[in-house]
Length: 161
Image 1 (tube, rainbow, N blue to C red):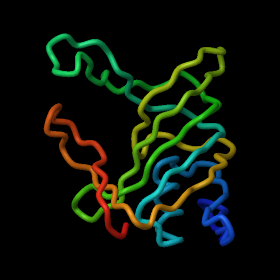
Image 2: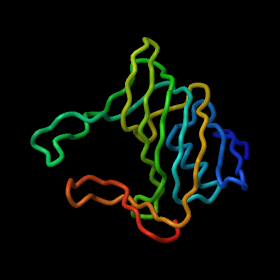
Image 3: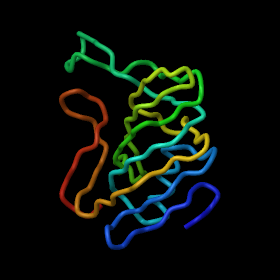
Image 4: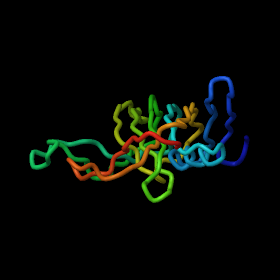
């Protein structure tokens, strides 16, 4: 499959989708588009490449929270970045919509290395993002509020994803 957002192909022998997201495609939105094209409702992915910016959260200490941490305010890189390593999960938001959870490490144009939890619709591809997607078919991934911490996290259950 080759369109204006991505180029990707299914490898039947390994049950994987491999490909790339094209310039200006949103990173997480592009992963969702690939999943929709190949009928993938749940899976794991890995990727590398370049972004015109990185928009993300990081953990910060918070002694008032039950976990002792919380997410920072939204952070955005000052320059384009090279995504050195990233991985994530694809599942449902609990209302039937596709949801992606990704963490990654990147280096900016000044050589500063950083990373965190990437935000949806805010990470446009600069040149390319290359990925491999591992579909999961017998386990459902559904994001729901965690009982202990009150934040939405993927919950895993047996069933067709």
